[in-house]
Amino acid sequence: MSQDSQHGKWTISDSEDEDNIIPPTPQKDSNKPSIKPDLERKPDTVTTFFKQERKLSPKRNEDTHSVKEPSAPSMGSEARKAAHVNQTLPVKYESHPSPSVKRKRETEEAGWNLSSSDDETPPPAPKKEPKKSDVSPKKKKTEDKRPPSPHGTSYYKEEPADFFETNLLSMNDMYRFYLNKVTGIPKKFNTGALHIKDILSPMFGTLKESVQFNYCFDIPWMVEQYPPEFRDKPVILVHGEKRESKARLIEQAKPYPHIRFCQAKLDIAFGTHHTKMMLLWYEEGFRVIILTSNLIRADWYQKTQGMWMSPLYPRLPEGSPGTAGESPTNFKSDLLEYLEAYRAPELAEWIDRIKQHDLSETRVYLIGSTPGRYQGPAMEKWGHLRLRKLLSEHTKPVLNEERWHVLGQFSSIGSMGLDKTKWLAAEFQRTLTTLGKARKSLTSPETQMLLVYPSVENVRTSLEGYPAGGSLPYSIQTAQKQLWLHSYFHGWHADVTGRSNAMPHIKTYMRVSPDYTQLAWFLVTSANLSKAAWGALEKNNTQIMVRSYELGVLYLPSAFNMSTFPVEKNVFPASSSSKGFPVPFDLPPQHYSSKEVFQLLGCFEIESHRVSWLPWILLFYSLF
Image 1: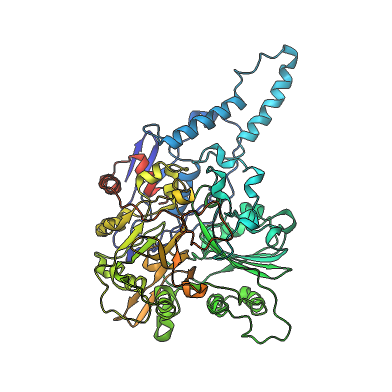
Image 2 (image 1 turned 180 degrees about the vertical axis):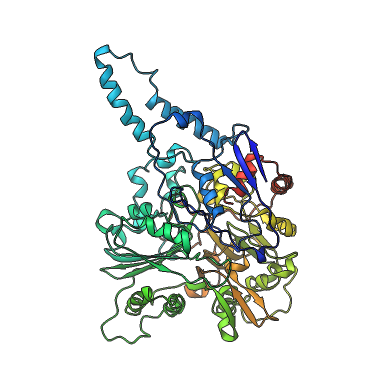
């Protein structure tokens, strides 16, 4: 069904049970940008909610200058292509803008007017008119070089030089857990945080080769993040693209002969390659980065992201046995097993390199997901059963543990069933409440599960404004089937890290004491709240099925000779001597108010009646 409005023509489609839907084949249009959303979950019933057929304004039709489309990440479906159209050429709405967006717009538009207005320049002498005419097109060419961004014109401005200055002395080497730098917040909240340019800089080693595992790529942008001296070093991109989206990804890489590809096998429907990891081989050794950011500019701009950065692993002496260089957390063997699960010849050389290095200083545990159906001992290798096994073997019960809250924070939500007993409050909560060997047949009703997911108001007042909702997908079809879930929701507040207005794309899970001062464990991962990411039990609990590739690291106090982790109260500026764990948001989290629940449900109600109130629609459907 199509309908016209002042914002263009919208097409609305419906579909039925999500398990029976085959994703649509993307249109073969190489001229359209190809950004895809970070959907880290099983796709929902409706793959396309709104498809905006853009109408050029008279001004745009009169403009004779061609606008170059941005280099963009590859994506797989028509719905994902429509998402980027919304991101790069957003629908303009003027009623009730968020205060942050309004202030930003006024400042930025004023800036552009000052640079391009002819009215504010003195009237030129007749003799100089031809010269003015010659200069004018150059200005316009610069202005039209990039299309409009939903983030405003400042999105394309380079950060100041000191934005990329990182003092190693200010970094916390104890946990090696870091947040990404955020543009637009006070400088002190970026002290000890990292940008991708910092990670790839000579400060951490003389790079020889690298591998980038990710979900979403903007190859030209990614290449620019390497320093000039490393920009032509060999890179392998590990991805999950197929067919047309794979072709577009390869097309992006044509100007860069040093880039090769490795395709992750996705044999189960609706699975994604969602792992985000860097393998960096230096002249001095080897390093692993496990992170939550896609390789696109927007993910390193004004979002809250996190990462674990390994120490620099030295090379083992010649002739060392294959088991040498293992850590107390078995990180080396677990990383090798994860890489071998790709069954990719392109990674064979890297597997051999890792075997030749000493990873014994690693103090975190690897938690991975790989697609497949697993039985017997293999069930505990991947997904949430892997987490359950580690919590059982390497933690101990705590006093009044029923009162220790389980906390999950994520940026996307998948389908979990008609009620909480289908998955969330059953097998998944049993995993998250495991402490030590004690086995419980039923989860204690006293154990609270708190889920942190930004509210409509959080997004409205964020640094990015409503476009931030593009990275927080939660489909109406899924939400309508699990209204029970909304009672778990808590808003995003992160004053402790200066990131309350930087919407989270980070994913964290933890067990926190009743007074929110201690942690029994902490996990940072690519896995969102979905069965596709974590796995779901089948065949009377004798088999687990996992759809996607995911990767994260688990912090356990026993690996640091501690009983619990104290929660750090002053995360920034970071201190190398701090023993507190830097939780990236405020504790305790604040439960959704009745107004916020109403807004969330109102968004779904509006869509069910096909009324396009743009702010909420942009928040939840700009990706579809």
